[in-house]
Each structure stands twice: as structure tokens, then as C-alpha cells.
Image 1 (cartoon, rainbow, N blue to C red):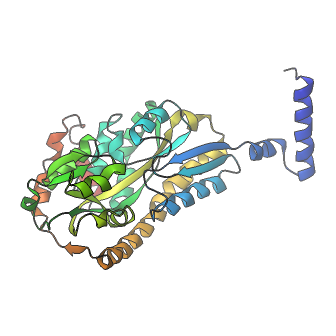
Image 2: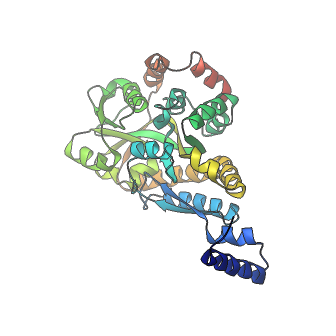
Image 3: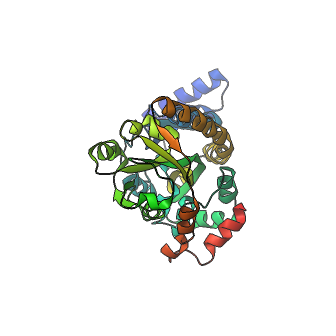
Length: 332
């Protein structure tokens, strides 16, 4: 290839800098031109989980040998989750925060990660993700342009409500906020209330104005989003040992140099175990904060909820036959 004079001088200057620094030329080029990946989070920067995701980004940068830079953005700054997943599938250089139910439109079986009462403890997430069953789903997802970077424990979700809920019958007629996905509507069905689809950014207003009379989330989120200001009771339904994931473009991944790929794979796979004790610590801390703020906690007879959850596979005829039972076996 023939270089123009300008290209030659630029190459010569870089080469001279490399020689002076003791670095090889490819190394200094990588150091000067890392690929920027923007991570789009649903949570705000005041959320106690936000610094954990900043830590995740830093770990990737440090492991990438200078080939990657990660910037973290709060509260869907770059766009709504559903829109961003579509953009990522087409090659956007974004790391998108997403619970696995949002992958339903691409590989329906992924929604089982958010099936009520499926997982019993945080360790079940790692068992499921590292299984041969889910590895097959990941291959299908990659063929559609999406790659799972990590799956981690998000917290156990409970019900914040206008009145105490001690059994499933107590939610009859209660308008419970849900995200607008099929699995989140299934969560609403299992909880027994009337499903009210509301964007997360609008939940506080919906609860304040009575558009919704209940919302479910981990305790730290109920506190950091100040939802506890709107309703007085948290019933410990424990209906979801919830997973969150970070996904990226398979095309972007394929175009990266090996050090970048290795960093994403190693940090992403390892972060499941790193993150779990962090979240477990938050759950204890934020129950205390909510109680100090005047929230009343109560235990729940879960039998009615669990019986309703046993019907979940019937709501998803598009799932691979026998998949739900296989997942139960994997995490047993």
C-alpha cells in the first residue's frame, strides 16, 4: 500500500514515540485509540448499585490492555431499554442494562430467568447461566446480533403497596405496576393484582396519584427511587430472585481485538460471583433504612403465589417444550 506524505509522517511520528517509550508500535496505537463502549443503565446515579456498574466498567478497561474505554450513563440517558436493545442488535457500540425478560423477543426461552419463584437463591443464577441449556440460547441470540456480557444477582423483589398483603387474595383489585413485557405481565398475574404497565421513570408519579397502588422491586431500589414516600407497606413476597444482565452487539464484539474480547469475557463471566455479596449486603442495609423511614414490613403466606406461579409455563406456549422443567433440574 502506498502512503501519502501526510500518512507517512504521521506513521513515522507514532513509530518514533513508540521507540522512545519502549513500546511496540501496535501497543502504542492501541493505547491511543481504545474503542469506546457506552453503558446505558436503567438505574439512576444515586442508586447504590450505580457505583458497582462503574466498577464493572473499570475492571473491563483495566483488563483490556488499553483497547477499551467504558463510560456509564444513568437513567436510560442514551435511550429506553427496548429501543436500545434494537439498536445494539444492529451494531450500536453500547452495553445495555437489561433484565433477561427483554430478550424474549429474540430468544423466548430467556424470559424464564424472570419467572416468578423459579430461582430460590442468588446462586441459582450462576448455575443457570453457566449451563449447557443457556449456552445454546446464547448461540441463538448471537445469531440475532446480541451477546450476553454478564448476568448478575439484582436483588430479591418484594411488594410495596397501599395496604398490607398477607396472602394472594389480599391483592385482589390492586393496581400493580409492571414493566411492559410479557413476563412482567406474568409477574403481575402471579401477584394477583390488576396489571398496570408504567415506565419506570413514571412509577413515583403513578403511585403518588393512585394510578398504581403497588409496585415491586428490591428493597434498595424501593428506597433509592423514593417509592417508600408514596406507600406505607412492604410485604415480603420474595416472588423474584431477580437477574439483571448487560448485553452488547455481537458485531461490535467480533470486530474487537483479542485483548478486548478477553477482557469482556473474563470480567463479564466472573462478575456474577463478585456482585452477589455486594447485593446481599445492600438488602440488609436498606431494610433498616426503610424501617427507619416508617415503612411497615410483614411476612407473607406464599403458598397461593407459588401455586399461581406453577401455571407460568402454560402462559408461554412458545417456550421450548420441557425447558421449564430442565431449568428446575439445573438449579435443584
